[in-house]
Image (cartoon, rainbow over all chains, first blue to last red; front, side, top):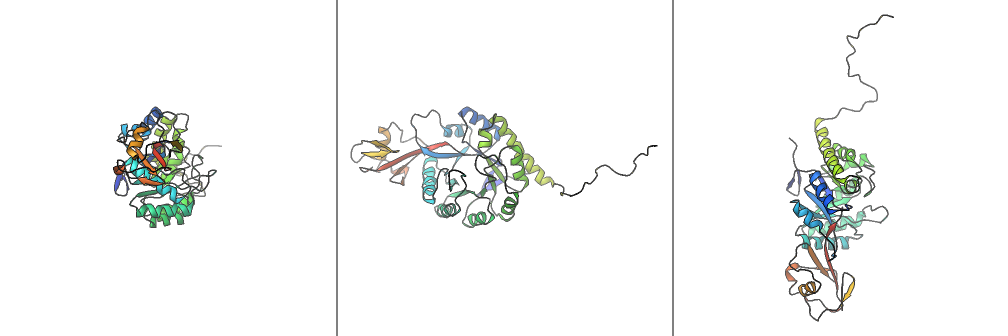
Length: 258
Length: 67
């Protein structure tokens, strides 16, 4: 029996979080949510467009789920805090996926602004889930600041490069007293499986699913990858060895005449 | 003159946020919307009283698709 993931006292059966960015049709998003089994689905906060047809919030509500707002696009702690407050007001949730990025080319987190925003939002009563660098020290500082989870990147957002620094991710997992959610970089199901095998508690995927040729099939594949990783981690993998170790017995080999 | 999501709008003096939303064909009772006036988030419960001053910069936001 696999234990459920618990974030800030809330039990989640699914260890896959789905980002809604990049889906070209809301119908595809609906089907991908279903295929992923995700319970937490992220949204961004943007200016209201009265002419927009359909709403991601309607899709999420129809699926019986709750939206997890992010602060994507914010470059400063000040803007991220304001965006989180707008999200709380709009969506009635004090959960926030905190993103404070350093530049547009890499979309990597700005460590000092991220930590400052996390501290302020925790003080304001938010449940803060910060998207962070794969830096064990920063992850520890975020946890110390009161974040409810840490969300290290595998590689840059949307890059599909998988887990670039397994050693760092392992260090983050080893020390963490809050859930570790791999966020960003997943390209396909095996990346998600590996994240869980390395000890991550959950995986967040957006582009890997939304920009796949068949997003619904990829949503299912990554959900199965997460499940496979969890089973494999519990099963206890064999040690890596330099040399081969036969699995067939050496005894009882038949002898053949020359 | 005030600015809503970066666009200039003429509204009567002492208009409240609720009145502004109605003028913009946005239902103030609709869920999923938040408003900031001059960078400060305006509590939903105060929209019927919160007046928007001349020259104010109003941001009206909602959730959209995003990772």
